[in-house]
Structure formats: C-alpha cells, structure tokens
Image (cartoon, rainbow, N blue to C red; front, top):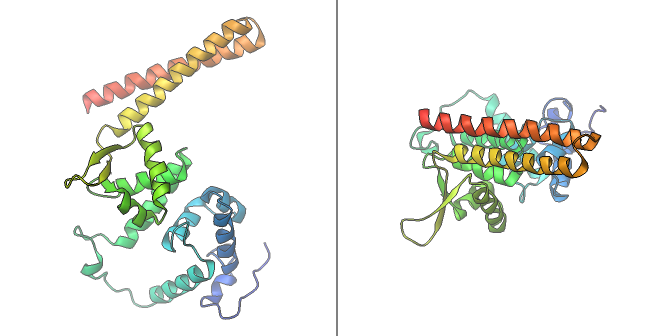
Length: 250
C-alpha cells in the first residue's frame, strides 16, 4: 500500500504516515464517498481493507451516516488523540449516566454490537435500532429518541421498526401520556425470533419436498431437493424443540 500524501494543515499528521493503523484523512474521504453512494459499512470496510467495526465506530462517533464529514472527523480525531496523550483524568460524574457509565464507552459498545448484528444478517439500520434498545436499561425508546441516537431520518426509523415488528424482534407500546409509541424489547424476543426462523425452515422444507415430487424423486434435481427438505425439516424441528425447552426451563 502506498503512503498517503500529507495534507497541509492536517491536525494529526502522524495519521497520514500510518495507512495500516489509524484511519488517514484520505480513508475518511473514501468513507464519506461510500456513504454518499449508500454503501453499507461492510462494503466501505472491504474497499478500505479495514474491519467493519472500525468503519461503524468512525461514522457513529462523527455525526452518523447522514452527517459524516471527512475533514471534520479527521480534525475531531486529532483533538481526541491530543487529549488522550495527556495524563488521564477521571470522567466527571456529570458526563456519566445514573449508573456511572461513560457515554462514549456506551456509544462504542452500541456501534460494535450493531456491527455484530449486521454481520448476523440483520439489515444495518434495523441492527442499529436493536443495538440502541439493548443498550438502554428500560429496553424501550420512542421514534424521536431513536432518531437522535442514530442521527437518521424519522422515515429510516419507521422503516426499521416496521421490519423489526414484522420479525417479532420488537413490539410497540403506547407511551404513558398516550401521545407517542415506544418500541420495546421484552424477555421473549429471541424465543419468538428463533421460532419464526424455525417455522420458515419447515415451510421451505415442505416446498422442497413438493418440488422433488414434481421434478421426480429419482432425478438429480429431485434428489437434491429431497436432501434439502430433509436437512431443513430436521433442523427446523430441532430448533423449535430447543427453543421450547429453554423457554420452559428458563
């Protein structure tokens, strides 16, 4: 990898000399370009040959996907680096939440957890909503609160919560004042999600068996579909039994 050219007036010139380490100013401009192209964090990370978690943290620390600016992010990172080189100071209590947690550490966790959920197959915006809800003690947030935390449009939140409700990963409750909806994770969320996934496997298995009968059970296509049906049917039933057992024991 060639060495990035140093930018004049850069607040953190040593970053330009570490293409394999910290993000450079050019890296950040490529991140901004990727966001403008509506690329996922994973696609941007692949372009830059960086971990997806690095890109996620970078964007979420510096304005979110709709307000990320490369030069501003580079300047802010330089300021943070200079502060970190000084003697570490205790985090003021005023900056901590009621349980003494550092908001920046919570933001980093939320960004990392978003990446993990994203990698598991949940679409990125939906993963961000789930991560925010899990990082909240109440397990519930309003649409406006999600907009502020994720720094995205209300329309993006509406689409995300609609998807998550359809997957039974969250449920909707009316706020105590009766004016707003709250989106809530409850204790049965993963049981219901696992059950829905298992039932889908069983349905696909049934469709594959029908296909095997249509194409001929002894033909190569029929044999292939029959094997698929057997595998998915067995896995689906095992998942349902395991989920039911753990819920009963739990």
